[in-house]
Image 1 (tube, rainbow, N blue to C red):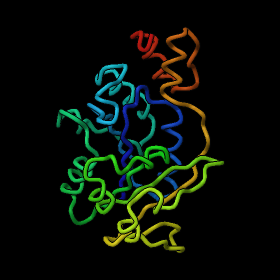
Image 2: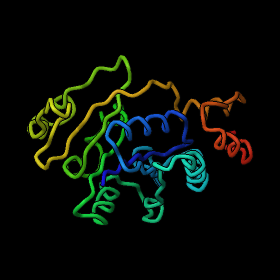
Image 3: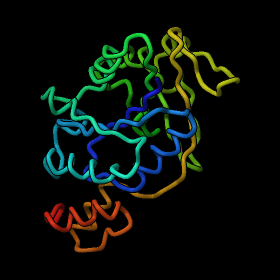
Image 4: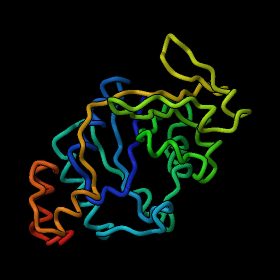
Length: 214
């Protein structure tokens, strides 16, 4: 089995999240992409604009029409700060013999991988798919990771990725450029401007109904 994991605050989830997930799913032939809203994101000091319940509901509404997309409330059930390494370990423990995980994130987030809890461990536990945008240069691993650790990952031309000692690979993949961000959506709402077509229609209706980000 090949599962993608896409985590984040999703505050709110938007069309860019969905399109990127769909492209990565196709590129790697993933059986599913699991969307996991962070309960308490450690890199944002636990800060978010809307409650977990609102963010959770918006994610469920956004992915409902795609049979390859699923949702997990793992991080809310676990409580406390949301650490990716614990999430990956959980899914691998459920299927120790036949599960391959592809952790999906943006290039800007990957630049800060060394600030993650047990970052060395998670890079050896699962594949990483680093999404890049047109005009962004692919950064050498040596520029992001300590040289001795970066040297463990060797470029494999056949798969166009950096294969590590445990067989896990770091891939850089370009995705369609949709200049949409959750922070911009929140700012537009705050200023009373339209966010229609930046988020799925079901999410738009939910935000309107519940007065989110006003």
